[in-house]
Amino acid sequence: WAAKKAAEDGMPQAAEMKAKADQAVRALEALKQQQASQPAPAPSAPAARAPATPAASSSAPTREELEQARKEMNLLVWAAKTSAEQGMPQAAMMKAKADAKVQEYQRMTQQMAPAR
Image (cartoon, rainbow, N blue to C red; front, side, top):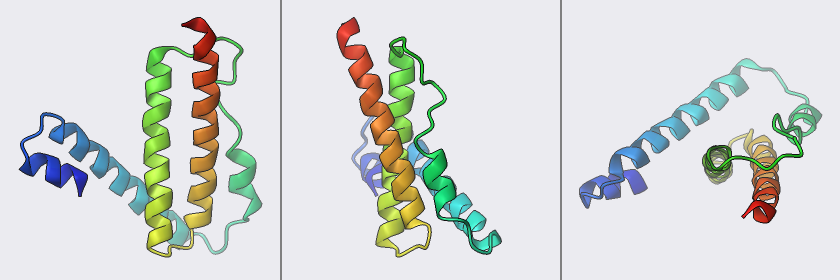
């Protein structure tokens, strides 16, 4: 909706918003297909993986890493909200992933604070 509205209003960021929306739709469709192909995923598996962060280092993240984490966080939050609104069975899994990404992003911003 936001990408469509931005394009209608001739906003310069319309193309970027459309690309993000398209990516989010693809991610949601992939989750739907994954859910349909799996009989019953173990509920503890996503929760066990979610807190693990690939960049769990003691050094402060770069601005690019922080921006990428922010984009991923926004996408996951959107996907969790959308799947919950649509009553999808993987809504809880998406919320867990979104919550983990929010925590990761907050941790990264806290690591950047002393470097400023």
